[in-house]
Image 1 (cartoon, rainbow, N blue to C red):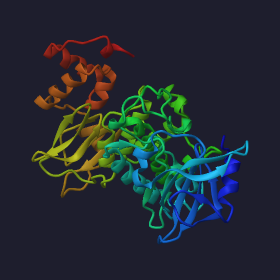
Image 2: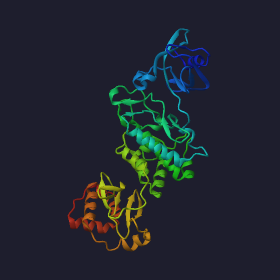
Image 3: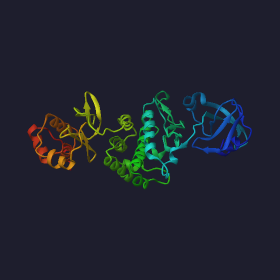
Image 4: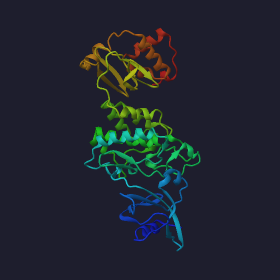
Length: 405
């Protein structure tokens, strides 16, 4: 049986007994211990640059198909605890220079805005891949000098070609969905940790002091089990921050963390929107349209405001009004300045409005979606009495969900 101590002592010596590699020089001050292997930075005779050597003290069956040519079976020979000579598997890969993301969380000089944008780019790329990493967490993410991020440690990687019984890793508890188990084999196993990290960095970038008070000793901000029970104060605070700043993409990502399942519907599209600047005006001629559960604005068949809102009013009086969670968001029409919001609320948009075909369509849609009447009234900018009167006139059927208080 090989122990961690056996490996550390062996790779710390000047002579290593290797099957195919020639003259590996380990930098002993870089040795670290993981869940399955001992890793270190090294130099290899005949190869340029620095390399990562990973020596496994636990047997892993997927290493060859995960690492391909970087995998060296039974490469390193060493003496086991009982004094017998044994050979262990090794992975050798190019060394990635930089610091792990966890070292930035809570650090006084961290640029959370840059970190948030960089992570969202990594998230979109990862969600677009044909495989899942399997154990996404801040200490498995390297931040390069240019602040771009790279995933490391693919021991938990999964692809459809691996089969449904190949899941050897479960991911780190503080970053995985509470209901993820070994029976859940899917490319979507990365959804939850990606959404969790993105929410943390985005909230820290918008209101650093508010969110830093939630950073725990292990660098986490959220508790997945508390999120599942809808009791996580840090997440609720983050969602309030996103609403206040009109950050619709990250509000949708944060809200999706309440999912009862490890996978998150439409997450890749949320990150597509998160990696592009949010619009600050609405193109003239745009109209409110719905896609799936949410609303946005389209012009000439193109989304000019992405469908991330609970509701959107058609442009009136030079402005567009959208509902993001419980908050009203206003954007001016292209070429116009935003009118006085108080006037829009009290005198114009809410007074004596005529019902249009679009209004009736949105009313029917909200009813069939099961929204409460009070919620529908808020989304349409009308009183609940007016909503009830219109429902009666159109003879729209109500469900028990519409009457909930």
